[in-house]
Length: 464
Ligand code: AMP
Ligand code: MG
Image 1 (tube, protein in one colour):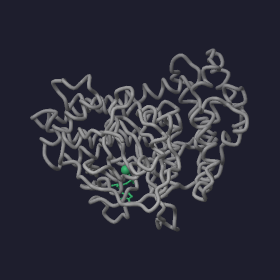
Image 2 (image 1 turned 90 degrees about the vertical axis):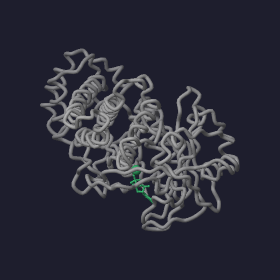
Image 3 (image 1 turned 120 degrees about the vertical axis):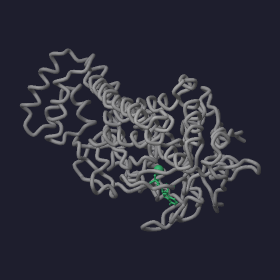
Image 4 (image 1 turned 180 degrees about the vertical axis):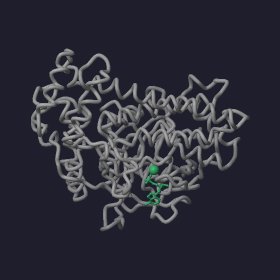
């Protein structure tokens, strides 16, 4: 049995409702994340036991509350005053073996008061997708929520066809979102104050006693998000639904629906079927993060200063720092990918232009560059070769490059096939892919096909 704590529900009771999971006919574990279980001090064998599996679908002992959390959010730029966990429940919080407080949260556990028109369920493919993407990000050193388990429920769920129902159990530093603050702001300044204090204590404890808590929180979240989005860009990750309800206060990546890693490099790349305007295209992500942070800042205005003009000035000052933080993180990270000791203000932007022109495979390029075979990727190799000569003159550390540039990412065409097989009950390909992306930089024989890009275009769908 796991003993949970409920500090969030206690600190800001108006932001969660106690709610119970649906009951499921035949829950069976499909994937249990053993390394993550160990981090949490949980025994994987127990998680596979009837009692463990029951917990993973939300059947908890009497007296243990589970919670649906309230939040609002801007979806594709439009404000929705109440979203919330429509098909999710917070099991509670626990301390991991390193002493960090983590949330255990279920997705697909049945309708809640926030379900609106939804059925409250989730299906196997998208939950496995969330598992793989989270583990890939984690292995690449990017802050992210992670899946502890995927359990099939034994019930079919109607989507475009009847699919196996599943529940994802995920672990997060917390589930506080920009949208949580937007929800609290509608309840009044005192609620935002309580939430700010809670968020600072939980995520940025070194700033918990700051005399200007709202400013401290805005500054820290802005820095964390600048860093996070820079890392997404460096790895070629497109979140796909950067609504304010999908942006965390902790700085972890969250809610992997139609997300994808790009193959060919182009800033306008979009995969998501619902992003028809390209609002959340690869190259727009830094600007969108800043836009979301502006929405976050708006919720904090009354706490930033009693004088509203002064409050806006403070918010603007902090958010101006986002661009500088982002560029520093991106430029430094790109220098590392190129084996350079420090950013090069000419070589780096020129490279991005060359890659864009031929939509060169982003992940493959950096490995090929270190191996001396990158020219093959360009229709006209001459401009690239001129660039590469200047790059080589800087004495790049090609051995170091192979320790930061992944060979294996969950590429769309590979992931899609692995998920289809998993739906049919064959987990072999998915396990092989997981094995590859959780040790992404070490080239191994037998995985060559997973490292190959594709020119095929892909559409991804929201993880419902
Ligand atoms: P997402 O696109 O997963 O970030 O979800 C956006 C909102 O829709 C959240 O409030 C979800 O809880 C809700 N939602 C998504 N799918 C379902 C579903 N099948 N049933 C109920 N609510 C859902
Ligand atoms: Mg979401």
